[in-house]
Length: 457
Image (cartoon, rainbow, N blue to C red; front, side):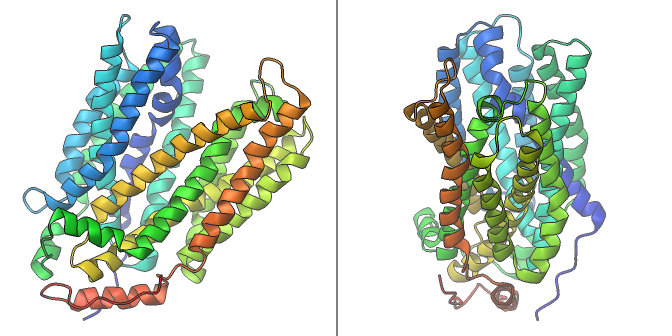
């Protein structure tokens, strides 16, 4: 019998979403401040610090699929996601404290070991956490509601970290003391929100296993089934392309503000704040629109909106701060859709894969999702920085031609990449109607999954 999915209680949704705030708090310190903290303040040198962080991030990337696969197959006492999140939170907390609150004297081994510990724990927490969100509801629109709440709290965490940095700077704290404060705040809040998550939010593995036993597949067969899942490959491709398009302007953002726009040093953080606040404010709008027009189509329109904003950047004259603030608002709104809608689409793709192959692979799919994000950001930096140099931009002695090259790569190259992402996802096959059919067939299977449903790629 096909039952209408019951919306999650607000208390359950809050308990699930709050840890996203905690996980996001240390994001900027870890990914932006760490090179300066260890390379300059602690005296390791930028080159040595860079090599160590490169090794750590490669480790972080390759462990995603492993943790996803393990959390799909192994649980404890009827729970699939909770044990991994609990262990990962403890490991990540220990690593975070050592990384962001180091002793006065450190060496490269210290940085390497605790970076690996932090990334291992972070992955053990993040991958099952994202997969768990896909499993909390069977409803097409309810999944968008879940991801919208989660990503709103994640954005609030990033803004909150900026607020902590601003307050501590006003109190005269050093950068090292500020990052340590963020670490302690994240650990303290994590000590409350993670146990609340584990206590309140249901992990449905035991219930689903009794009602609809999964077919145990060898690892190679599971990977083959995933690769043959064309909606998954299509969605992952669009996600990577859009991540690359977003990563290029992120890598060049402060260079553009300084040399292209002419913003002063004290004005530049305001554009970052405006960007993230616009993303937070727009998420409810994208949620409502996706209920009417479908998730993938609204994501496409959000990307189109970002393209329109970026195309206007080359004609914004230096000093026109208000005009660029409008661009930040529009692209920030688009970011809200980027964060809220694709993971909800991914949850539907998990259902499609389960019906075809006989095994839900949410952990592995979201692990590859995270891996794709990291590769896109790495590729964005690898393309953007050498690219502006190749076009003649030199921050030491900038010329107008070099600044023009900076603007082209900052604003126009992402538009081209986003157009490809839109083309890939525009006719995505998992519409609300087709997903309803998939869910109905899954719910009717009491002993395995039976015959697959065909969905055009």
